[in-house]
Image (cartoon, rainbow, N blue to C red):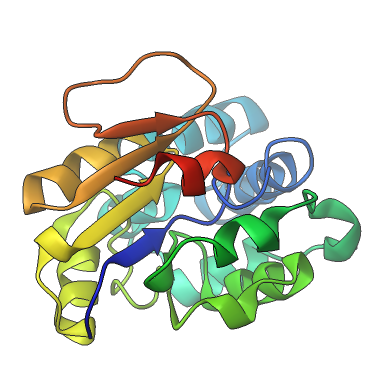
Length: 210
């Protein structure tokens, strides 16, 4: 495999998950924790946020501290009444991605079934050579090293030939530590030292390529 390998996050990088998808997932996770950990709503919601902040994903905290079955959790927290209506498809996304030369893959903390469905709803699944999900990382979410190393081994590519495109600073910090180039997708004007390029949205990526 020659050329740059572009590793894209999914939610809030390739599409805006904040208005509809994230609130639904957060409610589903809170309800799951209420039922399976015997917590009230306030405590379940607080624990969900705590695990997400500490480990990068609520699931990792549940597995570590409560022995939660990850496949059971993901199945029950990623059921959507009408996902096509919840996915916000931005105009020009496909055109922008096609202008990015090189191999493109997705690396997400979401489950594979959800990732595949969202990419198809966005009309861009065919632009990516592979999708790496939370299952691919053996349920060790970003920013843990394991998922990144699995991608490098699978693609047989050195880290210095990869560019991580992501809205999460902890994930970008790990990518930079491994030797990848880093592109921060966020309208914020901050650019930490481990970020090579900051862009306001994914549409700006073709013009920001180094």
